[in-house]
Image 1 (cartoon, one colour):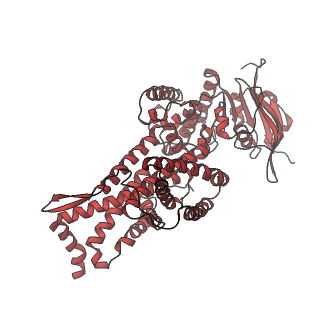
Image 2 (cartoon, rainbow over the protein chains, first blue to last red; image 1 turned 30 degrees about the horizontal axis):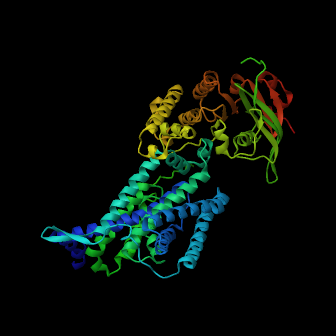
Image 3 (cartoon, chains in turn yellow, purple; image 1 turned 120 degrees about the vertical axis):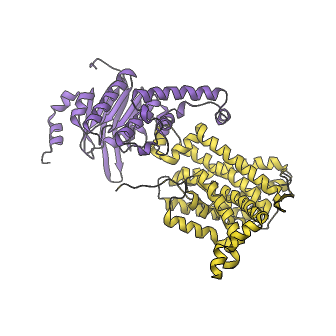
Length: 318
Length: 260
């Protein structure tokens, strides 16, 4: 009986009794959710265009953050460093297309996947050699991203808002809107959607797969850089950061591997869900709920809605 | 169309195509004249689709030359071939399933879109004019092929015959000089076949598009084509007008099946 009350009554009573705490949890969840969504977005872009789950995406986030900090430490102004990182990522995208994708086109998805695993470890090795293994702190202040926090009085209590979190959410929204316009309006964006749908047909209307792949890996790099800046600002930048990257996996399962809005909605669901669950149901189940909640939900999706909320339903005609 | 002397648009010379030890095409040569409807026929596995894929750049033959508009063509990728004014459709329909009919047709304009990236992004300035102009052209083609009623439908949900027509519309949107059709009437019923035949003739006559098509149905080919190439087991059996080909003993044997 106590257990049932603990599951079905107490948490909701607490939510209503202390609404400020509930809103705080919602906001914190929302912020982590946008960041999960951003990481997932990087995966979605590459999955859409080349049909490969890019194992190297989390390490790209670390690489972007580390490179940004190193350029700054070398005396380059902060915003110029951002530009340099973007140029570097364009070069990397070009190299990856030339050396890996072009050779492996039309091979099995598993082979492509394994090549991204290899790529990921190569990048880790190279990055450790170039940047060293020590954690460093992000240069978000130098980039002009506001820090500090304020309290918004609400329901007799108050909700704390971190300016950094607000910036992260705003930047994430801008990035998503821009990507949306890019996909629906520009020639390159349309080409990208075409490639995602059907390689042969895309080629037949004059779209170069090679060019599209370079662009899509570059865009995934841009997303990685944005993610790296904001994740790096919340903790330190180190190779441990890539673990967070794999939080994107349940997000992708929920949102669907091919959907940009799915990545965002999935990210928010996981971010908010795990925060709320941790606070209100966590005490019943012991601590550390945040660690497995996302995977638990994802497993449910795999069983009952394997294409995710927004993913393309794959129907094989027999 | 009369058999008066025409300009040769494309010439394939002594094409040999092998996959490992399997010979797909063996020493095939023929030409395609400007403004004609050229059919490639033959039994299953004769190498018809392979031939189209060679012209289109999907396959690169081990030996042989392709001459296009009087020049020898270097080895090209399919997207480069598309830029030279060659469009195609596929035997198994290759549409962008996630897009609507109009979006699919608009992808055919991809190569002609060249306004500034940022103008496109914010739909401003010359990018609007460009978008409107291409859109208008696509609507005309959609009208022409009588698929107006499915403009906004996602193509994945359309019946087979209509999908084939959307694919043709996309190819036409490229305003090609040479249109390659891989079994445009496969899997259609009699009525759909008649419609498709009519569209193919109209495209040829109204737009002056040169067409090379693969077809199984002999009766259809005889009505449509100006000239016919017959392939069998990757080799060339005959080349000539439908009448000539029909009375060719080797062709009759291949189609009716004699003991080899």
